[in-house]
Image (cartoon, rainbow, N blue to C red; front, top):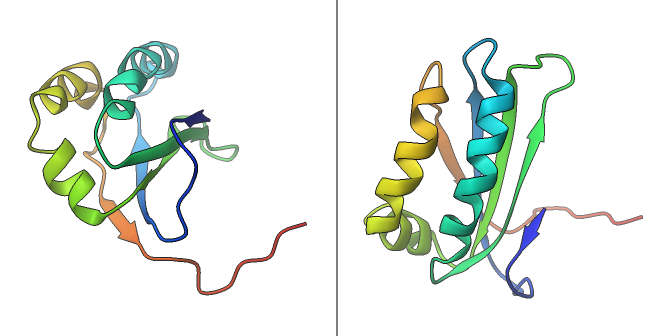
Length: 111
């Protein structure tokens, strides 16, 4: 997990299921490591993590925490940095992922 700053009381959670072309996972992970500092540099960014699926090894989940929805949809997606992110990662996706945003937890239980 890549942490940039302390998690605020309220945040937006971006969730993307990433299906990667067969046989390209290792290259994707290398490219993602290169792309990580790009997203982390965006104002309003809090943290992100990438997890590989156990049942489907060509699938990942990307979780990004933002201060606001606009931090992602405007601050990142409309930035020059996004073009670099896109160039590093988008060619791996088969199909292109759906990205959704989630509000604060309805229920949270910590061990």
